[in-house]
Image 1 (tube, rainbow, N blue to C red):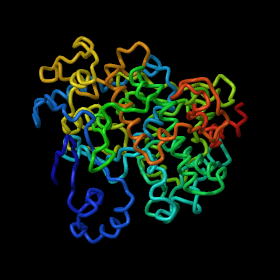
Image 2 (spheres, rainbow, N blue to C red):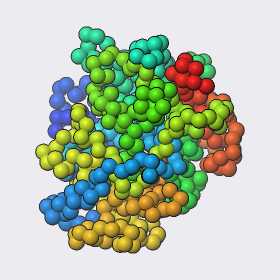
Image 3 (spheres, rainbow, N blue to C red):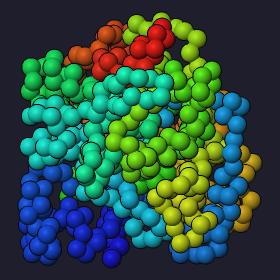
Image 4 (cartoon, rainbow, N blue to C red):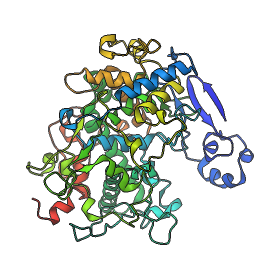
Length: 522
């Protein structure tokens, strides 16, 4: 295993692995690969964008000494201090909880990370997928190469639920899954298994499958036309719905202009994934996860009880199976009206119990390492929690401090009294992930601070701009599919006709609340 540094980029090569295939240049002989990989690489070599982790700020070098056990101890101590169970009700944001899992869907779309040990040299494990926002996490390699994902030459397979204890009918609201007799019994048939690691992200992925199939019906059954339309509507949701919920005004300037200042594609490898984004700034979503959710007509505080986050992970066994069942029970199909504001697409306001995301801060409550089946068990139990993994990874790949990035982009540093770190090695050298959380914690409007906003805006706008199907390259792009194509609200250009959000996609895909409609919950 070797570690390379090239123009500020950090990436891993593993001898004999499929990931090696993604890094060979076009003129490099494939004889260096094992026989089992050669044929697959021949298929991938042409037309597949190369993947590389890079740096948004390549001139910033970590001020912390490398491989220092004292630094590791201070990071673990900091992780322990913020790894406690917070009260959801006292820590609500104004952001609907659906955006927590839309953010996770976006993260899975542009990064691929199966790292186990956060301090190992594989801490930036990149995989072979493209970081471009082209929905390869949904489409894989298309219906010709991955037929098992598709029901025909254009439409995805969709899973049918099984009747539950309370809901005695079935719905086409599950991911497609392997059936009886398969070694993968109950496992989702999707390109990225992480999109079934908990039930909320699984239902988000299902919504995109259903949306694509509806678009196929609307555009005459042509796969490539539908794929491009779905990708562009997804990009619009990121730019005009997701980011305005999170970013401060300075970050939104980048979104509106469509012109990143710091994001520069690598001249050799093309689009790269900034480590400042993937290892730090975009991991703020971990702080937004609630301990429990008002899930649907059945699973809520007024009926059988809310759905705990532990159950949402146990249900899919961290991308494993459905607790021995072949398909999802109908009792657990999500009610999206409890996760997004759907009044803009014609749904009336009602008294449903609604979920708001938790505030982005250091009052951390996500303790999934305690759930049976947690996939990141490490040699050192102190390194297993999400805060510990995030802090140690940032250190392993040499991320700059939050203060360094603040200086680089020309904003005032957070004062030491607001950071609250007293340990000697980290004082004034705040880990970037922790700094992003602290920025938001001190923002009265609940938005992210300037450092996190800059990194997230630069990366997502940059990746969308580099996409072959980028809506930023089509000045007159307008949404095509949805009940609402005109609304007042946050827009990219100020033209209300160009606004498009998750509410539009969910309503068009007809996945909003099948259980509630069946049970008469109007």
